[in-house]
Length: 113
Image 1 (tube, rainbow, N blue to C red):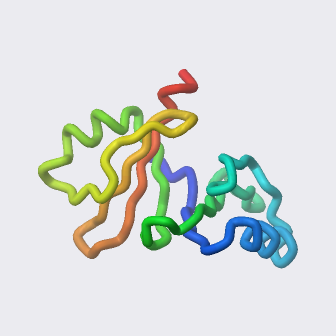
Image 2 (image 1 turned 120 degrees about the vertical axis):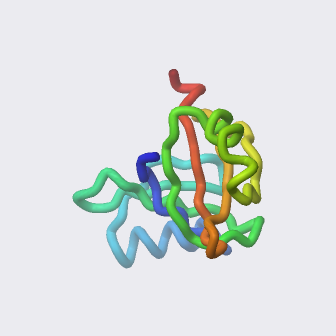
């Protein structure tokens, strides 16, 4: 697992984008529709991903794995998955909670290979 993003759920993507740009000077790296965007953090490969908070999840890391489906199959009996693997534009995505309820997101780039 490699940290790729810090995920921050937001109530209003447009307002949040303006906030992070104007207050901190962050530049937009990419956007997925009207619900998710990533911002470049200075001197870091890690990006801040902001997304509509339609599921009520807390902020947390987004980790790249080789295969979300393989990770899920190997860990579904040990980990509390709150969102099972699903398709997203670059690949597959899932969300689980650690033993303290902290949200952990995983992603693979299987559609980009």
